Length: 332
Picture 1 (cartoon, rainbow, N blue to C red):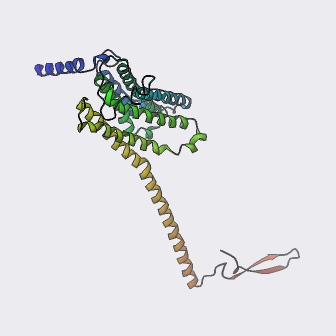
Picture 2 (tube, rainbow, N blue to C red):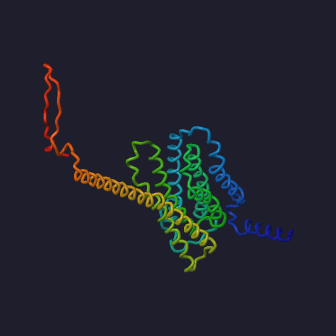
Picture 3 (cartoon, rainbow, N blue to C red):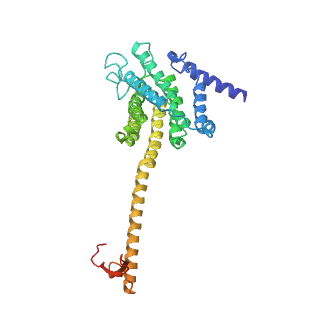
């Protein structure tokens, strides 16, 4: 048993010290995956257990202004990360803007300024996954528990750990295409959240909410195609990360697809069914009323719109007068 533990530990140390990118070994949170794992597990515990329990007997916090500044920060941060992946130097040909190949882009492990800057961009992208925890924490503090879906928690809880491996072993190259697309999606997404936080006056202009989920799904499809193509062509890029990124995108595509169906298509179908049911009940009531009317007519019942009606009143001189009102001409 002791020998097995020793072998596993030696293999782990060899992986961390010799198989990883030596440029990032001394960067914050990069020496070991366990701090990142601990933070992710703490996040899940807080948003699913501890947070709701602490807020159980408290009023929801009014975080409107905080959320406005937070979403504005995320838009700016995402835009900067996007430009770093697209063109980390002044030239548009320095990153995915032209220098990187969509077909095959090996990782540059050298100390070339462009390679080092791309690696730094990968670390900041990893850091951004922690700032996104605030999305869920705001839901907890505002007591919006219905917004904390399984998809939401899995997505935010897994991303820091997933990106950690990318920064540790492949900071740059083919895998950064995922970050390029993801930061662009986040520019759009946090812009929506920012507008939504501005209040009811902006709500009529936020009809495009469901298209955010569609954009997310398109993103994952593109990542799957981009990653899995390396299974069929020669490229000096680790096959393990081809599967890691490709399967990651596949998992989230199906999770987002299920969310889209439940949130929009199923709700739309349910709304149509309710309208059809209401229309059917209304027709049944009308038919029943018409049937009762016919039955009553056959049995000799008298209706105000079929016969003359008489009424009376007493005048000032004490005489009783009777007036006949012909209702046969009244419209129904």
